[in-house]
Image (cartoon, rainbow, N blue to C red; front, side):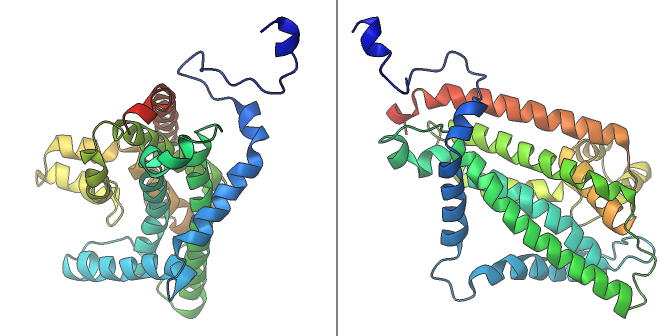
Length: 297
């Protein structure tokens, strides 16, 4: 084929030149497909269910009630002065649910979409990106639920009058980006590994549940620091929880919405750095697996 004939092609599909490759121009060209996948994820998630989208509300509310009964009433974990335990738990669960949904949703990208990937070309990274965007809608709904209960406790009870939203609420988009990058990065790594090691798909749900207990979702970080000083738990466990980037995200989310816990700019920068590093690592592994996954999936 001579040069004149090749110039007639509108698009040229060729192997990626590097593993760290994120072609924003190409992704923008396929933005309609991205929106289509987002619409598909939202519509089909609770299709043919009785309650449908109401599960967006039911799941965090029921979980918050259980956490309040078990950890605050039975285990007597304190949430801070003037902070209702239910509101404390709802804040942590609302933030955690977005990260876990992104991670679970992107962890089986290759296996779940092998039929589409084997038939038509489009930027493969659009699939995990659509999961992150569609879960953002779920986070927005659950965040609205949290705001409604926050207003209820403030205006109709005396328990939460000491809780105030402070200026750090402006950092909410940063927290959302950190959660999205962490979930997307870890999800792409796991999705790439499951093309060869199918056992990982069975461990993801279990692993995410364990990670929740190490991310200060149902207890304040100050409790862990106290337990380390008392010698109740090993110091390395305290460091593991403290340096977990999701612990920083959840603590900051509670701090901005309920004015409890400690806010550290250094920890926020650390969490942002880790999230970017995890995303770049996930992108490298994802692009490398994309070249040959169809032979092993």
